Image (cartoon, rainbow, N blue to C red; front, side):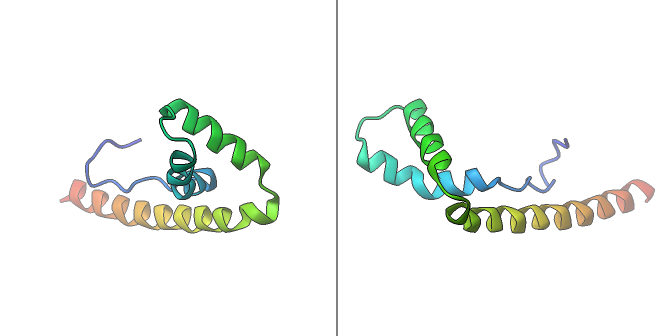
Length: 85
């Protein structure tokens, strides 16, 4: 994995899209909850979702993975150009 600051960021997983969307709801429903407890509740909610309920997050993850692959290919092409110059 490259540590170059201009390297593209990896795509997010379906769970990460779900967690980003739901984190604030969990915090509002459970005032004073710790970071670890938020993660635990998010994990439980994710496991409880049906395949149909997960589908929008899976689609976002697939699109983000494609974005990453495209950006990585472009980044690597430019890195190769700079190395051969």
